Length: 414
Image (cartoon, rainbow, N blue to C red; front, side, top):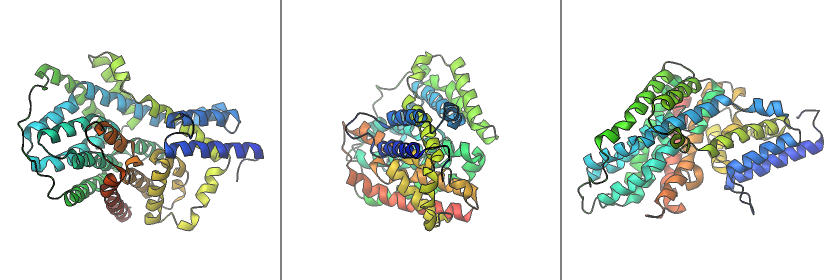
């Protein structure tokens, strides 16, 4: 079950490191210590090398640098759009042109579309304050609109390889092209956004009207020359997306786009670097090494063999396991754990798409199901409180309905 060159003590140590690391991934911090998820990934990776379960060369070889490059480049490009005021511009258009009755679907489809092409966590980080601002100006309850932002950003991100970190990982391992990924999962995203709108409208029916619609305030509007700062980044991003659709490897195309922006963008590069989530990149690197150690010690094989009785080669059981595991340990660690199982399926391509769909949509189940949810709740904390129960009233039905629809779609189009 595991390599003969490893002693029993090494195997036990590797399993312990894996269990402790995934415990932190599940609950956010190690009990009694201040070690967070990136910290646990670093410590776990170092220990896997220190106990000689993974050699230094194998540790380096276990890191999928295509995923790291793609994630870093996308964060850098989105940072330039954010610094250039693109997301502010979009929010301003929402404020100035929307009727109160159209605010909910506008937030759902705007955040969904943006999250499909830009990393969903960043979309939530930028748009959450604007959703509160817009709702307050229209004298509307911000809670359903914040829930719309969180859930729709998760749903929209399922459409593309660049929508979220786990899709980037799956795109690298599966070899599925950007265009094919989009063709298979964009319909799931569109249907999911419609379901999200329907669920939110039903649960908040009669409580979405504005008490008094105020005229949008113009004081905060940036001058026209400042708003034009996002034109170059947007043009580069459009070229990068075109490259994706033409079949250029996503990591290479994104790297070219990020390099171009560093050359043509007028801002200090340090401002762009400060917008990068370095902790997430460290988390990915450490996780690659931890999972390699778990594979070398035979743990991954044993865990996956325990799932055999569930007939995971069938779409429904596999989606259910992915949803459960994604909420237990978070979606990226879940994908890393299951990546060794998917190639064994009769139709591995459909299995990769199922994994991307279920691990992403699973993020809507609870507040802690995805980083995007946590960002929205935390950014809104000073203005409104969104509790576990209040979120779950929306998250549970949205997750169950969208995962069911997604499973049926992938199965029917396999």
